[in-house]
Amino acid sequence: MSPDVDLTAPTPGPHPLRDGLLRLDQRVFEAVAARHWPGADPLLPRLSRSANHGALWFAAAAALAASRTPRARRAAVRGLASLGLASLTINTLGKRSVRRPRPVLDPVPLVRQLKRQPITTSFPSGHAASAAAFATGVALESPAWGAAVAPVAAAVALSRVYTGVHFPSDVLAGAALGAGAAFAVRGMVPTRAQLVPPARPRADVPALPGGEGLVMVANTASGTADRVRALCDALPRAEVVECEPGDVGAELEKAAGRARVLGVCGGDGTVNAAAEIAMRHGVPLAVLPGGTLNHFAYDLGVEDVRDLCRALEGGEGVRVDVGRFASGERSGIFLNTFSLGVYPELVRERERWSSRIGGWPAGVLAAVRVLRADRHPLEAEVRGRRRPLWMLFAGNGTYHRMGLTPGRRLDLADGQLDVRVVHGGRRPALRLLSAALAGPLTRSPAHAAVQVGRLRLAGVAPGTLLAYDGEITETRGDLLLEKLPEALTVYRPLAGNTAVKEPSWRPGAHT
Image (tube, rainbow, N blue to C red; front, side):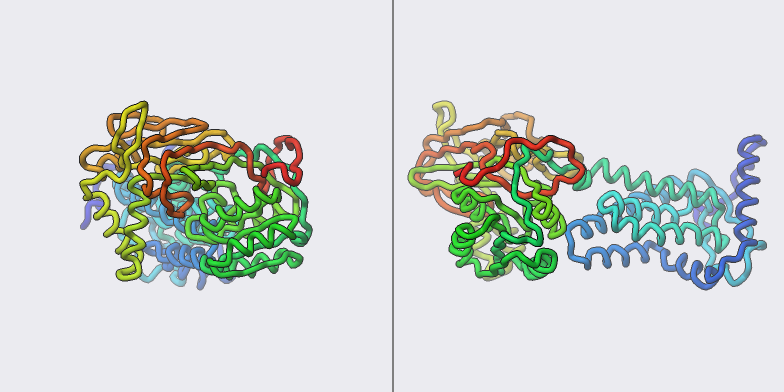
């Protein structure tokens, strides 16, 4: 007999409150056993068995992920993470702390009883904990999907009493533990809703009923077909232009000349090109995430067609900062990040090998080659002293980290460049890792972080690689980074936000 089914512990002495609750628990159990619900006898035992070892919830997570929406995929992952924590807690602490025997099956009709009775202790219910953990985790990320999963989770919890394998208090305790596990996961990894930036400063952008006046340019290389079809269904008056990567710039230019609102669907590089054109033409930008990472759209609070359509038809928008870099006669903007050093070198190495061995192997090989190199990829003059650097990173806005999540921007109009530097020296991998783990507000001999509105780097060798929003180019000498405050007007849903609108957008205001 395994330790968690050892029921030989001494019986505790009398305790009026505890004994009264146990008697009530037994009466409720017997009342459920005596109750007959039409259709429940064939359904609930099967449902209870389907939840063994979490199989039902893994299937539900797969169904959520198959919906191919970011929110549903995150909800599935969060549900499984919550289930895992709840199961770990039940199996390591719960079952071993309270060695309660299973109920006697005499009052339970034979048709309801499970063919294979569980042999573990009764308190708390692992099935109820898993059901509550998965449903609560899903609901914390996506209330709509949570509402769909909740009735199934409740039925699984009920089935454990209906089939006679648990007392009601076992189920209630398990459900409470499962919900607590989901909230604990949220404490470690915040939901997307906890990280939505403030809707400020607001801009008075035109409402587009049915999408009239929107010209959406979609980069077909980003795998945007499904999103574009959904947009056409939701906004039938919008004009959609699908094009190959080489034609994106020209199509964006033509679209900006005839559109009330310029739309773009693609990855961060495509969105960067659209932002530069929208600023030059003085039109607001509508971003539909269509790439792999979609940092700008997600930090803005736009995840899918539904979010963007609500903003477009409601005339809801904000102004955001834009980063700008200049090196000799070469210049550009960045909405997300700018970097020098290891990262651009890594991207170049990855592109060199990806066509031969594939993307992921090429990325691993590139990291090994770059981090093992003796040569520092970057040298710059800092405070009159020339120093080797492994990496210089500048974010368009301050990046914050909550729990175990990667850094996210909580304010896209804070006027700051978030500058991180990893100094030169031995063991670059260790230095880069320590900088990543330490966070944005720490300093050490290996790395430093500061928030500024403008940064000038002297002594950067011409030809040094730089990366901006995933694009790679070369420097032409000394480098200037600066912020363009509130330079871009973009659509984003503002529902539920009570802030007062700020001065209105006008054509040509940010050129």
